[in-house]
Image (cartoon, rainbow, N blue to C red; front, side):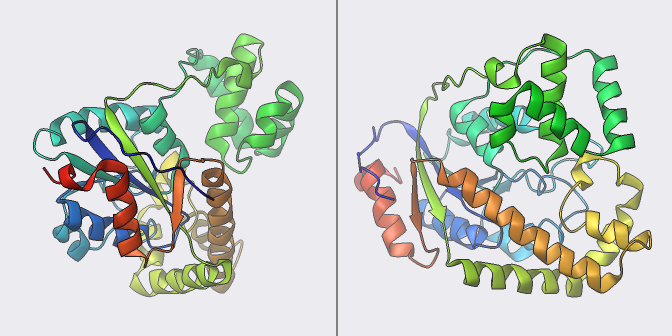
Length: 316
């Protein structure tokens, strides 16, 4: 995918956004660039923000955390409700503080909605009555996601085609708005981009599919060796929290319940992680502002960033 190179206003603050699928090497690249530009790192990962989930969410290691200033890593309790809107609000407030001393900040993560909310803003959707929200939540708990996804297909076929239908939070939110307003969820989304007072350059990390899938498989094996099973057991009291509706934990919970074996759980974690990576690539592939690189092409990545921001001023 070709991207027209336009040098941005070098007097403004800027963020370097690093995106890509799970297991692609975003963390290592973010630290390399953080050192290059003397920049702090903001994690835009919807699960790495939670404490007690370091292994299953592949949070940066203690050594990596020491090598660069990180934010939104193990910063929230699993019982806290957190979404892309809250992330954008908190991240924007943090950027105001970081820009005082750092003209450049790195943002890295694979959560597409978090990236979108920070860079473009989100639509102001109507508040939903708590009783309605609780009723829909009960329907999901009793009947699963399939009936609600089918309802979404009927009331908003446009959003049904684009939403990740395996993500309960997104399906339930759309159903809430549809029932509350009588209108399609997609009709409530204006798609108007918010104005930001900083410049943005987006770097995508990609690898050949077979290589990526092999990396994911090896990483799952490493997670199990590092203690993912014990970590998941420690999270059992919180299994109904949205934070734990996550690949790696769902499968092990089923194992603990005797539904599947440990070996089956490991294979499902690998399979579901690969499927998640595919969905991430589909999401980010729609963003024409992203310039894609192999994560080992550090010199090419730096040259591209410097050409966009203006090399002479990027560290000033």
